[in-house]
Image (cartoon, one colour):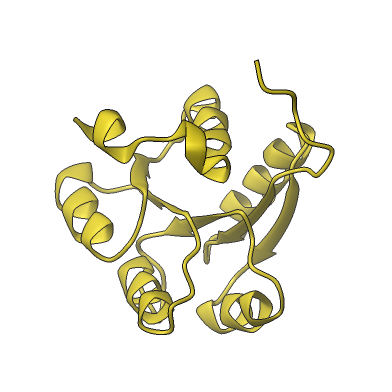
Length: 136
């Protein structure tokens, strides 16, 4: 069994809903992760230019740039952040579009706490994550 590293997983959250940002921030910090939250895509882009997180939680439907637009923007600039798209709408269309744009997976709101933590841990340690098995 592989031991936990001393460095906590660094998660960035981009969601325009302050209640979602605060709830996810508190929950992930309680799980031992470091968290940065962003209300706008511009805030996120400025931050990832300085330091890339291990994982990005990205809301699909936001005012201004959508989550899909954010994925495409990052991809076009070769900023590859393992991304979990979170959405309150159906997963079928989201999954296909977001995977094609570079996301690892999509999760539906309200989020299942155990599933979220497990998914973040898997994508932050890529050697333990096989997307073909996860989505097969």
